[in-house]
Image 1 (cartoon, rainbow, N blue to C red):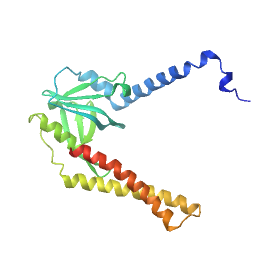
Image 2: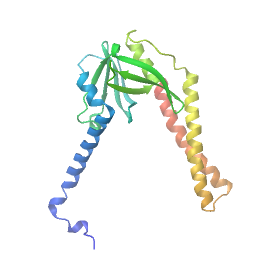
Image 3: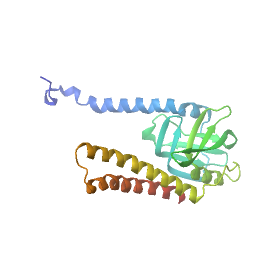
Image 4: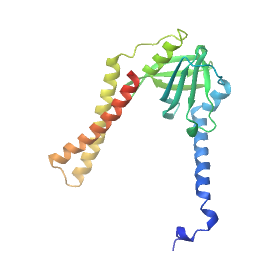
Length: 214
């Protein structure tokens, strides 16, 4: 018979939050290693320079690590400062890359225009961000960086539309397959299978779209 929580010794209860904190610190430290953050902060320490432009709650990808809505990107006179919410990186300090040490390359991820920033010469890390975000940072750099293109409204709208269609069809198809396997294939239930993901993804992508064009 398994031991119930009531039978646990009193000293074990406080260990749960301690174990959670230690686990969280270990995970965030590993992400700092896999993303290359620690290497960048050691090579390009940040200073207290006042930013010309600050973009909060930005998303990016550093190698295989996704950093969704937790980045702060500062366009400073001397370079690009990157930081993240302290709770997601207790040991990850901000780093600041001189503009001359950044090589920007246009890429596309899931139909959406992006920019991959190769950081350092030789390369010490990579950061992939929205193309529109890079254009705003580049414009604030007062001509220090060379623009790589224009994120026109049509490109952004087309990319988000394709994302919405692909996501809706994929999730709706999964819901439909489940409904059919359970013998529920009436038209009303099939419409619901696609209506729910269409609305959910539509709201999510519309918020992301507004965040880029604001």
